[in-house]
Image (spheres, rainbow, N blue to C red):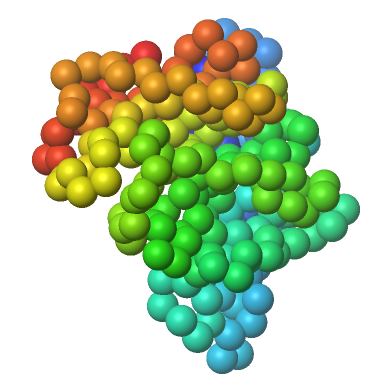
Length: 230
């Protein structure tokens, strides 16, 4: 089983607040020796004379990176970005009703997924095209009418066919606490499959293979105890 997160070769240094891109070279032997080489240092924009904290969350096979950095003036108001060797860091714009953008993964075609915080709605999973620099879609809850500052949906990973995974609220508005379910989201057609796995009541998907044959995630209650599934 293989997920894009498992291939992410990123390191975040709290001391210098930068994201490092690392290239891995391994010798083809029974006891392969691997060496890492720093290929790029990605810094956030300046704030009060120093770069802002920046965290890389996903990387594709082209070495393109996505992640987020903190707002200089407003706590918890994060900005999304992507980085390529050709463009450098490009900041993802925020729609007018969005105050936080947290990308989590990028596929080889430049589709970025993550979760944005929408005023009056809550967290919503999104898909964004790096090439057009446009948000293509957001993942809606199962039932309309949710008005909460909690998570309505979230997207954690996407494969090269545009199949994404995460979770969304499946309970009706007014149910407390809300119940979320792991989902597979076809960002090409908009089709959503609720997995409904495990003992619940909540579940979430964190990674998907390029073949879409395997999905990995968790299920459990609202307590910290969760159980992995694939």
